[in-house]
Length: 473
Ligand code: ATP
Image (spheres, rainbow, N blue to C red):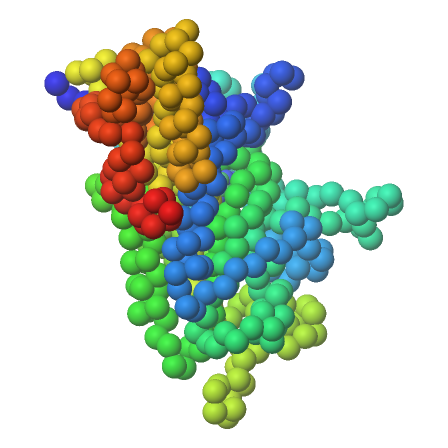
């Protein structure tokens, strides 16, 4: 039998049922393109961020971290070009007044009508999109005619202080990158970093997105993990550097997040699609339940951003060669990913309907699982079993992410832990009281092994690939 293909509904349903993701403000009917992360989603998100930080900041001698503000000086966004060029092409349904991304409507129409050899909307100007929509009589998802294509800026505006108007206008950041560029001199002057070096940051970004129905893939508020890697273009070959960053991204996804290579592909941006400041851009795409979509982008942004900020601020944002003979504006390569897209990919990739054993399993890599182990007393109404299980639970709690469950029967507890991705379950039963052994069950194989309770930590350290000294003390 062919394994069932995971649908978006499967993921949304599991995420809600088990407390990974909830609709934001659900008690008020929800807020479009906004989601809250529940107790388990928060842990998964945090584990992904920690892994990213560990890989790209802590384990690299050439990287440092930054935590800049969401609200930056408004000139930042003029310098970066966001106030004028950070736009999406939108059309309005003339009956319902709902807005849609024109490029998405065209893309969906092309796929549905097998017109995939036509020019991709990524490569169309606003005028070309308009003409294409008219020529093919493309309608809204509700079947109504749509307006002409208009461009809308994605930046969220707000006001600072009590006055309103141009003077107090400020933006919620549309990307974390600009906080890195504007701190370039601060970082160079306060650290011992020498080019080439990079600065990484994880933080919230905001975009006034209109597309709905893609779950956490595209939201108004999301978390970005961005790296700006600065270098001297005279001594570092950008193509080689770009390749090495592409390799690092690929390895993170395939080795650390355990994503199958068949579900990933590189896509080079065409000349029309690429941002004006970029010399070369690639997207690392993942095969999401709704098709191939951008997971992670990498762009060679040249010295565009630092030069723009120099011009708008009047400050020097340059570097000097080690022999002090040349001053120059560093160039930059930017790998930028949304943590929430990594999260959604991880859910999609590791969701498994084990039809043979009638269960749903989240086969998360052990570093990502919200809990590494669950502890159960066989029956909840036996104080001696509870007491013995509590001792084991308490001992594990300070060392490994551990959860406790004494609700319903043991079979249901296993099913629950499988669904939330807990790799091991330990059961304390009547035999434990006699010979101090417990059963330990493996999530993926459902095999149960009997071991001495004094061997649990050693067993888990080995199976979970943890540093034994940290666990065994
Ligand atoms: P897209 O084409 O999907 O709108 P983008 O090319 O505009 O994305 P970038 O500006 O390159 O995205 O941002 C870097 C990364 O941030 C993207 O690769 C993606 O992982 C993430 N990202 C961008 N917009 C959103 C969003 N609205 N919700 C969640 N993640 C996002």
